Length: 98
Image (cartoon, rainbow, N blue to C red; front, side, top):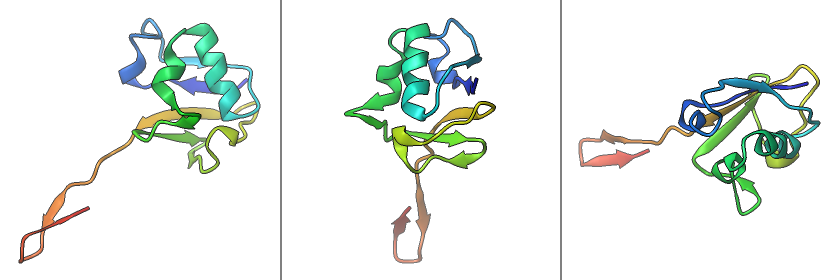
């Protein structure tokens, strides 16, 4: 079963559990499985049928590009990573937002 690593921001919903095995073949099933174990966690990961825009998902070290349809393997590692926002850098004529 894939191993799911729960990010620090969601540990209160998992009673502090940092990783859990979930029987799943794709990311949607991973999240549904997590929600069965930890009710309410799905709403923090999914919005309008998509992974929330403030999250990235890495499966076996690769960023998931297919959203909830992304396949996971029997031995996959799934990480939910809070997105890192851009900033601003000086350009000589003000700031360039990245």
